Amino acid sequence: MTQMMDILLCAIVAVLFIMSVILLFGKGGFLIAGYNTASKEEKAKYDEPKLCRTMGAGLLSISIASGISVYFYFLNYPPKYYIFTSAVIVISVVVMLVLGNTAYCKKQ
Image 1 (tube, helix red, strand yellow):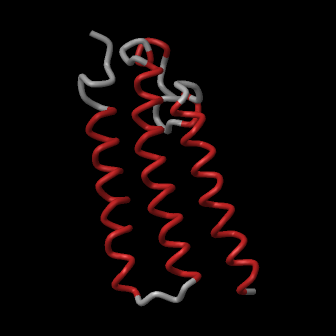
Image 2: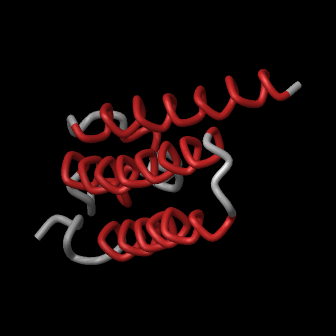
């Protein structure tokens, strides 16, 4: 059971990393929740490559923090070490939401 959980944790981090690379290239708008279901008029308000790169950068920081958490898990670190990686994930999500929903990613 533990070996399966280890594989699953590594697979999740790998999928997050792959998705972040796709988004960093400005592709993969279909991966962004809310954007992929928006109408054509709503999508026209956003600069899709810029939005993808913004979400990709945020997802990259989340995948790196998740990878560090998995590394801590493998080394049996005490829970206090997870506070840093959890803070990075929360900050990344907040920054992604703010930048994605403001003039930064909207067309001028």
